[in-house]
Structures are given as structure tokens and as C-alpha cells.
Length: 315
Image (cartoon, rainbow, N blue to C red; front, side, top):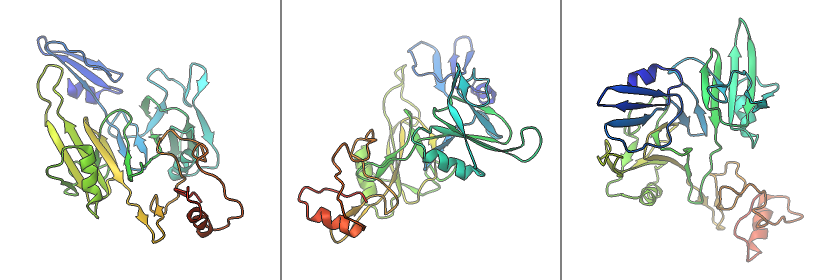
């Protein structure tokens, strides 16, 4: 039944009944498993997510894929029920440029990139999608990628995963479960916060993978490979694979200068936001006040030092 799912376009799950060997193939991902005697329910994913927020959406292991709103979408530009969920980006000549266009648009949720050298439909095209495609249709010379902008919490950790678990991988070809030795188990750690602390205490830590697979299955049995495990990664994983009850989190080690300023983001470009990731304002809902007449970051820091209420600066 699993093999049939793997070979079927758009299979998202299976239900198998032991008593009469009945196999159901689902073209939508099951969101709930109801306790039922002699039944098994599995969801199925082929996606891999990189550490910059990009997820390759595929329904077959190889070949090109074009974005579709869902399995019923017959358009070629993200139009469904009279609404178009994409637009064409102009003067884009590479996949990287297409990704950059998406990252610069706060409404972007995915891209479709076409690079066809010859034949029907030859040319290059970048579509910016304002919703996440629910299906990727096998189409030569196309790439369909969903996007979620990476965000770090105040401690320097970033978690990616839209509602299901992810395990760390070195890259898209990594078939090991510990990054070929780069994920080192932290013995005696049984909580996510403890795993984070183990990373912070290790100067070589770039990420953590934490597994908490302890809840019994619907039939009361223990899940396969049950247990709690923390891995401290001494190399930065470039991909994440969907794996239940796992979390993969990049770690960004900030540094504090002699004046007491902590450089959030390792001096890469970052704008300040409140602790809530939902803060999309540009001044922290009024917590950030502009200082007139300041022309350098050093002057901005000095203005903060002279203000007893100052907690941070954005320059």
C-alpha cells in the first residue's frame, strides 16, 4: 500500500485495513486519525526544506514541477475560482533573482520558475505566488518552491515547520539521521529548552535537532523509535526533512560589544521587532522612537546610552 502511494501522483496519505487487506490512497493529507480496530493511517510527504525558508514542492522524486493552487487547478498561472494568486515578475533571469523578488515581497508565499531552453513555451519566467500551492504538477523545466521567511527568537533560535515536525539534514542528499556525525547527541537532556542550553554552551553549535516521541498511538501501542533525544549540530544543516515529533532549529550566536550592545543577527541585515513574531510594524508599535539629527550608527548608539529608557536601537 505504501509503495502504491509512493508511485501515485499527488498521494498524500494511506489508510490500510489489516482484516481484508484494503488499501485507500488519499490525494489530500489526513489531518486526524480516528481510533479504529485493524486500521492504520499514514500521511506522506516528499518535500525537503532548506535553512533559508525555501521548500521544494514535489510529487515525484525527480523532474520539474509547476505550482498549482490545488489538485483541481487546471490553470497555468495560479488562477482558481476566478481569483489569481500569482503575478509575473519582470526582468528576472535566474532562479536566485526570482527567490530574491519573493523575499522582498511581504505577500509572497511561493514561486514558480521556468527555464526552458527550446521548444514550445521556451523562455524564462518567474511567478510570485501570494498563497502556498497545495499541489506541484510534474512539468519539465519548472520549479515550484514555497517560502517562509526565517525568523529568530530573542535567544537566537529559529524554528521552521508549518504544523508538523522537521529533522535536520546536511543537504538534500543527506540520508543519515545525524548529519553524518555532525549532530552530536547531548546525553541527559530531556526538554527542548535543555537542548537549546546545550547548544548555547557549545561554541561550535550551529543548530539543534530535538525529538520528543513519547505519546502512545491511537491503538495504545508505542510508536516506532520512541524516546527523547537532543542533537547539537556542529555544522549548519542546509535542509530539513518532515519527520514527526522532531524540531530542527538554526542557532544564530549574537555577540556583545564593549559598550554593551548585542549585535542581533551576527551583523547581517535585520530590523528590530517585538518578541511577538506577529509584529509587522516598523517601530515596534511605538516602542521605537526616531532620533533626529543622527547620521551614523555610533551616534545612534550614543543616543541610546544617554537615554535611561533605551533598550535597543535600530539603525
